[in-house]
Image (cartoon, rainbow, N blue to C red; front, side, top):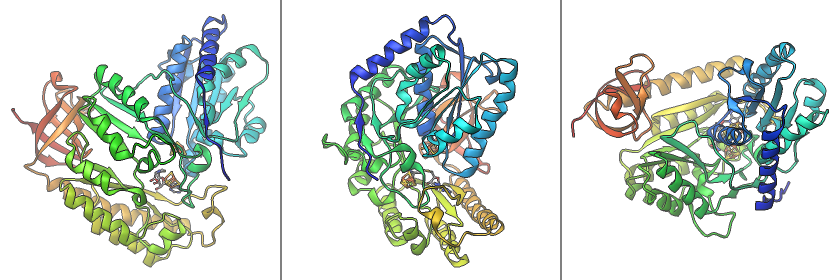
Amino acid sequence: MREEIRKISQEEMLLQQSFAQKVKDHPNRPQTYYIVTYGCQMNAHDSEKLAGMLRQMGLTPAADRREADFVLHNTCCIRDNAERKALGNVTWLKEVKKDRPGMLIGVCGCMIQQPVMAEKLLKQYPFIDIAFGTGNLYRLPEYLYEALTQKERIIRVDANASTLFEGLPVCRENSLKSYITVMYGCNNFCSYCIVPYVRGRERSRAADDIVREAESLVAAGAKEIMLLGQNVNSYGTDSENGVSFAQLLRRVSKTGIERIRFMTSHPKDLSDALIDEMAVNPVIAPHLHLPVQAGSNRILQMMNRRYTREHYLEKVRKLRSAIPHLGLTTDLIVAFPGETEEEFLETVSLVEEVRYDSAYTFIYSPRKGTRAAEMPGRIDPEVASERIERLIAVQERITGEILSGMNGQTVHVLVEGTSRRRATQLTGKSERNINVNFNGSECDIGKIIPVRITGAGSNTLRGEKEEE
Ligand code: SAH
Ligand code: SF4
Ligand code: F3S
């Protein structure tokens, strides 16, 4: 399967702007919108673009989805439960629509981009008015215009998800911490994963476009930028611009932004140049999300991860010797087809060896069309639950030990707001991406300030503001 990368021309983008204007001028257009977002940061950022387009068309956000004229679900299909949740909520809205027949229901994102989905929607979900895949997100104005002017439902899913476009308006959720997508898609085809099928081939944005976006965010008051991609370490390898991810990080760090994070890094593509850049560049936060997935070489091979346990541990050793205070986090899958108790214990022992700050743990979920879905040796759900619980217990203990070991240290917190529990408490994230709560005044919100750690909860730190 070789998808062509299709760069969307400026003319096509301008055409969408003219559709946006037509929607805005349409007497029966929806006045308000509500976007429901599932899935990863990439999807969250796509929703910011969808919101940007909707604002351009004159719609304003509704406080509740039941009151919105247009409800758009930006879906995820990474695991079965993500998909079920999205479909469950769309179906629930059907009842609301009975009382408000003018309401438009839209569904977009990864779930829609799956091969058989468009057909399924047409047949089983007749109350959905608009559906489109990840590759044609930029065409929302056109689809909304069609929905307003035609009688039929608008189901638009191109088989090719590999489009690359610039210049969409973005309505950002958070003005302090902003996302920038540096690359779209994934070429890795890990055997369990649906993402390469629903997000298309790897395509990198031009470094100049990324730097310009960072500069405008800095000018608008952003303190932290998170660079996004499924596999940021292979940034640039698909294009001729000759800029590697390490070089891109350096360029973005010179825009005046105070802190940069990025995700996700694939261990096989983590270069020495990137490690060196992280070690010398104070703007790059000393935090790395480095998904390992499993600790057994046989399982890693079955997963098509293309590194061994030993390679991974060697990268961790290099990282820690170059960046001593580095916080590592990871993703782990238990109960991959055929995983034995011994192989599961190798994941546990790797977690013990690396000592991650925290980990996202998942039970393997078969995804139709992926190679692992055809593999024999499905693990009994009870065994899977029992394994994940044991793994979580080990990680929780390690997180607790790491957090209590930080007592007395000074960390630097980007203050995001007051704590949910107490209004006199401020909350934010340390450079290692750990939540920190401390007493302070609201005038510190939006600043990066030093905080001395005085205690720890199960996954948060407590501290006191240090006088400078
Ligand atoms: N691109 C990132 C992660 C994308 S998905 C990376 O390569 O690391 C986020 C996480 O979901 C993955 O790291 C993996 O741990 C998990 N995941 C993906 N497919 C899954 C599946 N079929 N079942 C269970 N977990 C899955
Ligand atoms: Fe999925 Fe693997 Fe690509 Fe990550 S690197 S998105 S896990 S295929
Ligand atoms: Fe889900 Fe798509 Fe992200 S499948 S995890 S929303 S890339």
